[in-house]
Length: 239
Image (cartoon, rainbow, N blue to C red):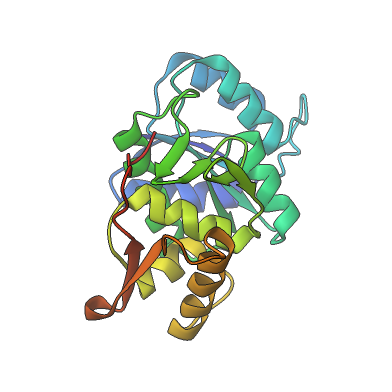
């Protein structure tokens, strides 16, 4: 499986490249956005990993601009995981709005990066992701990955970043996920979380999606200490 790695810091590029190669990925490593675009014009990738702040010459194009260029290259595009030193809601929203699919905060834990990369690739393969296929659906819930928007029964619902990440993960997996899996995929890589933190986050998301408790969108599965989306009439799966 071929990965495009875009990182302008040589030591970080070498470290991440070796991590990926040790897990069986074939890696094309680019030091600049221009070099990355040259690769992307020629080769097909399962995914790209892009540093948010690319400062190498000649164009000094940053990561968000590069993702936009990727999205304009071809209709069927590969998913992108963004790495950044910043850990704030504004940055995360910018990543999703630019067309990024995942988000890891530096310094990252190797296990977290690999888990999120693997899940992102699997989700993209299941959806055969394209610009016309980035709306995830479950019953009355719709999540537009590109626009980072959520609608319930057609009405827009504003979700904070963590609640958005949790909903996106539940929609992408389509099955039951454990508390530990939610922590690994949803929480920033530099922060820890407990089962109680996950329970509280799920409760907040339930209230935002279903304030009147008319369809109870998320079900607790005590057997595995996990959660899944409720089976709902009209549920259509990923769009």
